[in-house]
Image (cartoon, rainbow, N blue to C red; front, side, top):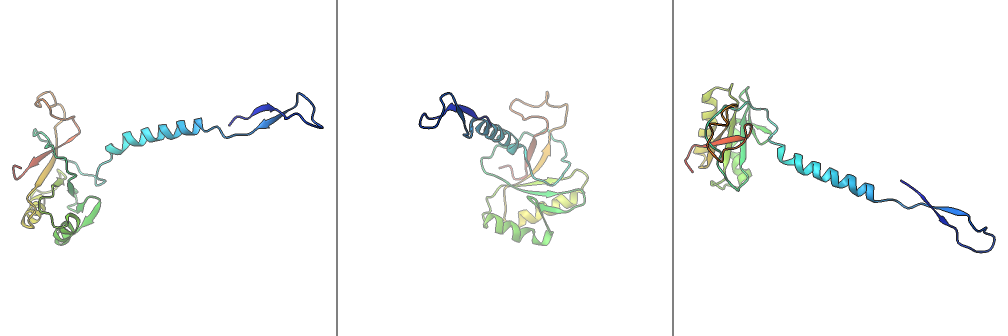
Length: 169
């Protein structure tokens, strides 16, 4: 912060030419820093995804555009099931999904499975979700690196996930 010197008020007992410090807070640098932080947070917020590390398989399918925010079920390489970031047992999967979605069967649900996990475990999760009445269930996969040139127009970037819709919706 900078302080400036201003002439003192003229009056009795004061000499002309004396200066006193004017201590005011300069808000401009503070506003500059806040705007930079705002921009940084606005840029990094969309890059944050579900916190469960999953190595997704590769696919040639394009992503499905959906304006609704999907519910993500992840299965990591150990076979642990997560709804968003919280682990859940297969027996508690349906009650938790119904509580989260407020029993709306048209809720979009994405299933992310690590490529090292057995296919049967992913199908067990998808079957459990499907038999509970949720019809909009999709698998999530990544586009293989190096195949971006072969991807059709409108396909997404190399690390963006693509969804294979199991119901054809």
